[in-house]
Image 1 (cartoon, helix red, strand yellow):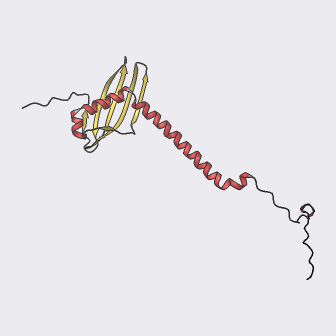
Image 2 (image 1 turned 90 degrees about the vertical axis):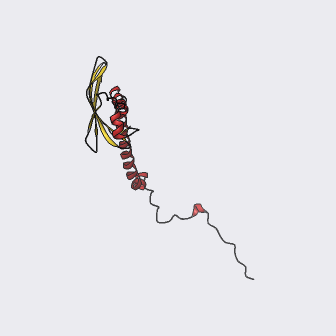
Image 3 (image 1 turned 90 degrees about the horizontal axis):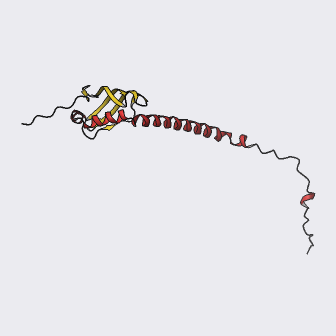
Amino acid sequence: MPRTSPPTYKDPVEQTPSAVSPTPRPNWWKRNWKWFVPVGCFSIAVLFVAFVAAVVLIVFSAVKSTDVYKDALTRAKAHPAVIEALGSPITEGFLLSGNTNVNGASGEANLSIPVSGPKGKGTIYVAATKSLGRWNYSGLVLEIAKTDQRIDLLQRPTAASSP
């Protein structure tokens, strides 16, 4: 039997380095910009939309918390002609328009409040001034969307005559 010599191992420290040096690893930006830029732009857009939505929500809730807004809705919901035209319950829409300017015991308001009920939709138009802490309406009407009929909410409803 021929005698074989044991395998020889070279010490790793003594190994000769290869002629090709490894390329340096690219920095974080070069490796990740393709996903980071779209995600960053989308995040900024979402934050902007959320900011605008928050401002709109704050403004609408501030107007909806005013006395003139609440009083106009209360009058409309209790008026028999409105209940007959729109049905019950009457709910207010979210996108109201107009302005209110209140400074202590004085102010003015011009509002358009969308409302709806089971029978139809309409808009409450409010024109009022506040003097000495009290709102005085120069106009408070409900316009029915289908018929353009206007119901004056300042007039007291007439009592139905009994037979």
